[in-house]
Length: 386
Image (cartoon, rainbow, N blue to C red; front, top):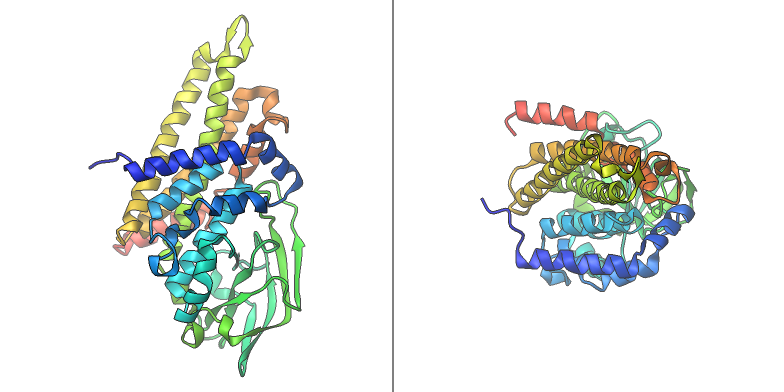
């Protein structure tokens, strides 16, 4: 087995690192976090690198599906700021991958070129005030009226609704008794009449602000049913497609990026900070902390890129992606908190980036399917031989 990065992926990393240093300096990342703003100009420059098309077939202007390369982009951006990496997910993954897998031909031809150009982002409208992991129980309802669809309901933790072009919304489109056969996805513009968006003040993941969204008799054209007419009541099968496996890897890539940044900062600080006449990195207790964190991070990165390779090969990888998401997310949380202890009191001060890493890392085991859900999936799918 060869774990060496290809020339192309190595060049991609180097390009992204140069981009981050030039367009995403630490001072700017701190400001985006502090003000909870999306740096749209920087995002446009990122699109100019051509990385938005890594999930889009060549016929629509992309470079073809490359999950490994997509994870590299997410990891490298997340090392500096989720204010850019999360919108990247919203474009190349939430919009690009879902349109490729679930969109009608008309939707693909209309929307995928906009993904490649960095002009299209989806926010996920899945979770509701009373519905988390049990997505088949969503209560937001949609009904057909000729060539229109009317939507009523509410979504919670809808990150990026303020900055997206469409909310990729899971709705109940049939009788409640027809569980798994009564769900659809629709595309709802955030500025459509009847849509109300309210920010939720959260600890971390600033830039793609988390929101509550209410739909009050929102009217959209039937052409906004994902998959066209054939997609009506097919939402569950779309939800269970391979895109769900990749979504877990997207979060794992965020985890690896945040953990890498935290460890690099703590490593440097341990050799700069002096106590009792020598750097604190000379003390065995600090060295062991750093060594343990580096080992866990290495394992998380290996799991991430092995699972991404499996997804690229269209291999069955539901168990592997759940294990990867579980391990990487928990490792990132533990690493960020341990790095904060190395900084001591300074790790609690906002002028140091490690304080932001902690806030972001605490979210990662929750988003994209909690750690408890991943454990359930690992056991269930392994028992079923998947």
